[in-house]
Length: 319
Image (tube, rainbow, N blue to C red; front, side, top):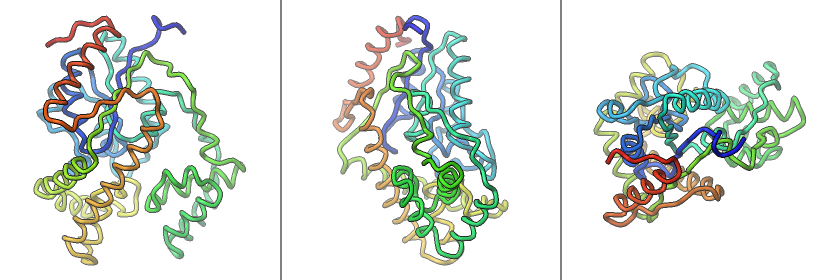
């Protein structure tokens, strides 16, 4: 497929709280774009505050996709995301618009930009149930150590509390003899005419922004949001409830820790998460990085990116 036949795609990545939403809205409005969320948590309905979803006003500025599409107890995976995103990218291109994938979930992003192929056939329900019991008896860390012994690459990517995906990775190895990492084949070249934009900033300032964002989430009712999810009967051990800001508040609501400790845990784990995000994206040489630390740097980045997109896609921005 030559460049003239490739579908257009813009991707905006970076750590949490760096300012991806603001930039994506400006660019999408300027280039007749539609935004696809590349975040593994924003798909869940009723989980708004803790996932930092765009506000109703922001959602109304340009069309958005892959937000609020499943309940917190419904199955969702990177393979499902990949299928839906590919279809939407084609539909948006057919409308003459430009799709913008915006998010910080590295595997989700790369599954689309570089055509990962996933193994969906290896299943052993009985083994899965045994591993679940093992996690309940021995603890999630012990389960995670079992994965690390057979598939250290996947273990590094998955948090011990993400029990469902840890079990799935062990299941694939036990059934097939191959690691999950081996099944995730990645094409070296993107199938799209793509521009991947990365936002970064001084680490101390980023951490300050993360801490402030958590404080704003608390003011916006994150505790009440988590309480409502529990009252609705959603399992606190489900994949959705393992999201940052949710799993830390569950023990507070159960009276096991103080609110102060829960908030500090959210801030600390979010900072660690941002560090892992940067490590993941730094391994992608295709990304064009923009440092938005200094005042005025966002406007400069927008101007440079707009000029590049105008040339790449032969579009005159609506600015």
